[in-house]
Length: 126
Image (cartoon, rainbow, N blue to C red; front, side, top):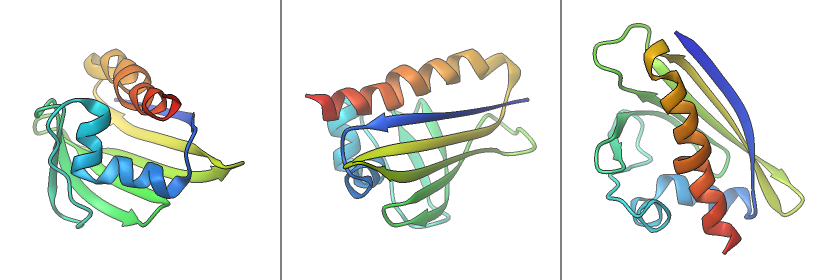
């Protein structure tokens, strides 16, 4: 198991970035794929037409998202924490992803950098 941590700068306020990460309609706008999402802890989510699935654990409006990402029957759970910090009219998004299976690590890191936060950065840079 491996952990990954990185900061991403997004050219939008933390409140808007939070909406982009939690509202299914906005998620579909910047991902181009179907999204099932709720800000209700305990609900399951699905992104990129089911390529990413898991359970929503915690939300702090405009500031924090905590999710469990499913990798089969893996123990311990793989936890994603995104904390949004205001940074001069922009957002510094702090990502922590724990317990990534070794065999999935490179794909997950590339996904965060390209498809997830890379796409979100490009969406706000238009």
